[in-house]
Amino acid sequence: MAAVLVPLFLVLDWFTMPPELFGRFATYRFAVTGFMVVQLVTIRLTHASRWSFLHGFAFTVIVGGMITWMTVDLGGFDSSYYAGLNLIIAANLLIPWRTSYAAANSLLTVMMYVLVNAIWGGPFHVAALVNNLFFLGSMVVAAIATATAKFELIENEFAARTDLLEANQNLERSRAELKSARDALWGEMEVAKRIQTALLPQNRRVGAYDVAARMLPAAEVGGDYYDIVEAGEGRHWIAIGDVSGHGVESGLVMMMTQTSILSLVRENPALGPADVFHHVNGVLLENISRLRASRYMTLNVVRLEDDQLVLAGKHQDVLVWRAATGQVETVSNEGCWLGVVEDTRRAVRDQAVPMHEGDVALFYTDGATEAMSASGEMFGEGRLAAALARVASGPLDRAIESLFAELAAFRAQLVDDVTLLLVRRSTLAAAGALDGAASAQEGEEGDAAAVRALPARSRRRA
Picture 1 (cartoon, rainbow, N blue to C red):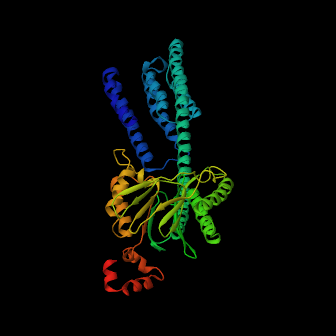
Picture 2 (cartoon, rainbow, N blue to C red):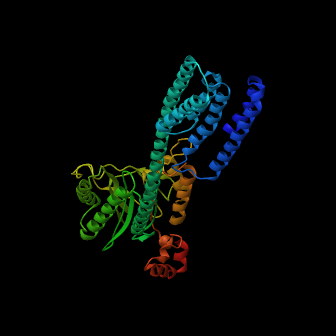
Picture 3 (cartoon, rainbow, N blue to C red):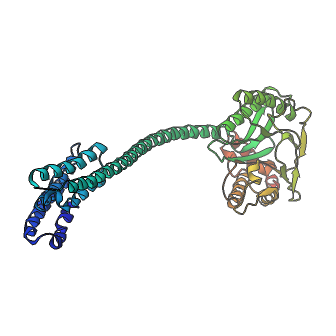
C-alpha cells in the first residue's frame, strides 16, 4: 500500500506545495518508495516469524520520518502537513498485532514528529502545537482502541479455528476407531451368520414327506427360525417361528428355541406338539429374563404323521394345496406366543391337518405376506396362496425358488426376515422329487434303487 500511495501523493504535492520544494519532496517520495519495494520483496521471500512485527515499525520510521521531515521544510509545528501522520497512525488498523505494538507504533509516530520539529522546525505558535497534538493524540487513542478490538476478534477466530481443527482431528480419530470397531463387528456378525446358516437343515425327505425350506434374513443375523428334526424310531418333526425384531439378540433366542426343541423331541418320545411348545416356553421365558431382553416368538411345532400334520402353537396361517382339486386351503392355528405367559397348556392344543398324497403345506413367516411394494401395498396371504397354487405340483426346491423370486419382484426392499417351508405328502414317484437335492443326502441312493427295482407297470403308475 505504501509503495503505491507514497508516490501517488506527489500529485497532491504538485498542486499544494511551493514549487521550490516540489523537487525535494519528489526525491523524498521516490526514495521512500524504493525502501517500501525492498521491504515488500523481503516480506514475500521470508517466512513469518516472531520478529515479523518489526516490519510495522520499519514502515512507521521510514514513511512517518518522510512526512515529519516534510513538515520541517514547510515550517515545523505551524505546518498543517502533519495531518499526513494520521494516515501512518491509521495504518495500525491494517496490521493484526497486539495492543502494546499498536500503542508503541502510534506513540513512535507522535514522538518522532515532536522531536524532529522541536530540533529543526524553527519558531512556532504554541496554539498550533497544541492543536496538532490534540488531533494526533485523538487518532492514537482511536487507533489503539480499534486495533485492540480487531486483535481480540482475530485471536478469538484463531482460537476457534484451533478448537475446530482439534475437534476435526478427534473426529477423524473417532471415525477411524469406529470404522475399526465396525469392521470387527461385521466380521463377528459374518461368523454369527455363517453359524446360524450352518444350523439350518438341508432339504430332504422325512418319513412320508418331502421337505424344502429357505430363510432370507433382513439383518446380518436373522430372527426367523425353522428346523427339520428326525427324532429316531420313525418320529419326524418340523418347526417354524419368528422372533420379534432381528439381529444378534433375536438370533440368540432363535438358537435357544432350536436347541430346546431338538432336546425335547429326541429325549421324550411321548411328548406331543402342545407339550413341546409348553416346555420350550418355560425355557425361553427364563433365558429371556436373564438376557434382560424384551422378546417374544411366534412358533408352530409340527409332528409329521403318515396321513396328517399335528401342529401346536401360534404362528401364521398354514396354506395347504390339495393335489386332488388344485385348490389352496387356509388352516388357522390358535394359541399364544412363546415368552409371553408362563403356562400355555390352556391356550395351546394339538391340531390335526389331514394330508393326502401330493398335498403340499406351506409354512411361512410374516416377512412374506407383509412384503411391501413401492406403492405401499402388501403382498398378502392371497397372493402367496395364488403363487403356491402355480408351483405346488413341481419339485419343491424349484417351487421355493419361484416363490422367493415372486416376492423379490414385488417388494421394494427387504425389511424383514423371510422364511418359507414346503411340506409335501410323498407319492412313490415323489421319493426323490427335490430336483436332485435328496440324492445328495446319506442313504437316498438306496431309496432311488428301490424305486428303480419296481415292476415297469408300478413305475409308470408312480
